[in-house]
Length: 107
Image 1 (cartoon, one colour):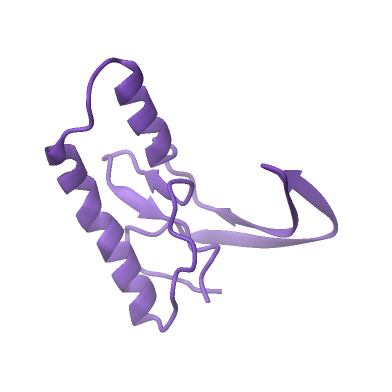
Image 2: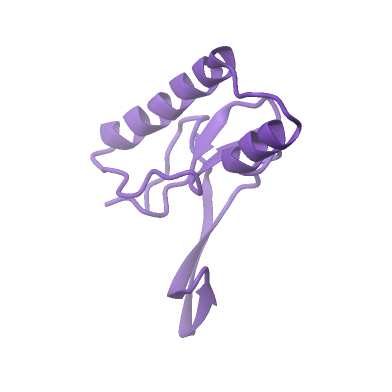
């Protein structure tokens, strides 16, 4: 398991292996990774809340999030790994609205 030192990566706390499987979003899982808590949740939820309030995601806001996403990817690559699934479900926000990436899909 990667143990990243970047503040832009959610730190893994535990890998839980199950004999059975559980279903989430119509997918079956046998293992799951427990990571540190992201205070503001998924980036997608923040974007949806902004849009639902009748506002737009500004370029300035995107420029604020994007460098921290790139720093997370750079940190993963520096450890010799690649993230295999960077999606809206894998990007979270900390208490300072900095983007953080989960590392569950790295190889």
